[in-house]
Image 1 (tube, rainbow, N blue to C red):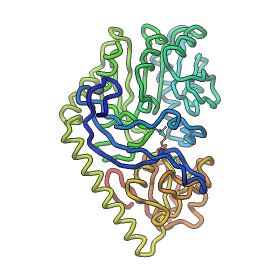
Image 2 (spheres, protein in one colour; image 1 turned 90 degrees about the vertical axis):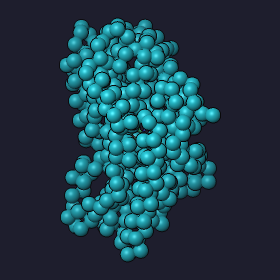
Image 3 (cartoon, rainbow, N blue to C red; image 1 turned 120 degrees about the vertical axis):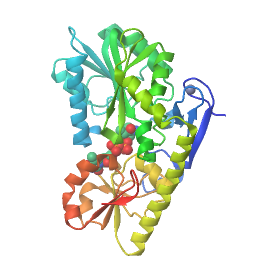
Image 4 (tube, rainbow, N blue to C red; image 1 turned 30 degrees about the vertical axis):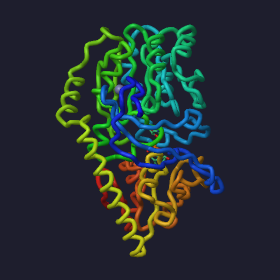
Length: 398
Ligand code: JHZ
Ligand code: ZN
């Protein structure tokens, strides 16, 4: 039986995507023979209600080299991190000589913005190659102690799109206990289960996303390790996230937003098995509709391309059986993905400039979370008669 990664109680499985590849393991055209596959399935802990993957990917495979994600590729995300930095500077980094640490800093936009305001900052990640100062390690008690010795306690420890992909959260909280100033906060943001269910955004489920947080589960998680969930804020980015603010127990009174969202989750039955099983039936419905639409368009002689070789689209493509026969190529701005094939589904990735050369009749928007930005940028596609295919929150053409 699979057990909860936090409290060791049984996991109640509610959906099985079956055999899936690693979502960021774009393959060379001659490398498709030794792709790694695992059973992608999700369940909920019967005790703490934390929704999580049933099976884990071996850690040495999970953090493979050449990780091709860059948040700065999206102007909306760059602005998001700049604004987050400014908010911290105004509300949390107000004492004398404040210090901010980011776990998994990616392009370093947030820390760079803090640095420009003269604030001491440090990224902690094993593969740091960004432009900001990096402590190369996983965040745990040992790395936290090393940082404390050189830099002193942290007023803010921040993490975006990372905590949900750390299978063992105990070392993270042990590190926080070492490094956080007595009134410091741990702020993290990740996709919200409530939003995933509301939009049937099942493509948020892939190998890297181990946990699908709710306010209920994060509150239990924080308390388990001697902390308190002090604030929650919904964010529009990446298809709907929550920013959680965690403080040392007794140091902050939770804001009304925590109780409000908890009540909303209870009312929606967010962590009822019946709700999660209904979500599973909707997933099957979207697959049926999307596959039928693509087959019909192809049979009618239309050309189709995909847009955005996202990690998310790995689940859509592999679960729906969308390969190069249905969608011959996917355009993407990430140079490291060009010339490679999407994991498992083997759709060739081409540069973004290929999109207009010539436009396809239909574009399957794999990067639907960046829809506004991409549709604005590619306005000429629609003006030329092109149509976007979306599958969140349901299959539709615009
Ligand atoms: P995007 C990754 O997921 C992995 P992905 C990770 N697990 C995670 O949680 C999120 O990021 C945050 C391209 N693109 O952001 C670039 C264009 O081509 O949805 C990217 O390859 N043109 C850490 O991969 C992809 O689309 C554009 O204009 O699902 C977007 O990937 C834009 C804006 C993007 O994350
Ligand atoms: Zn649990």
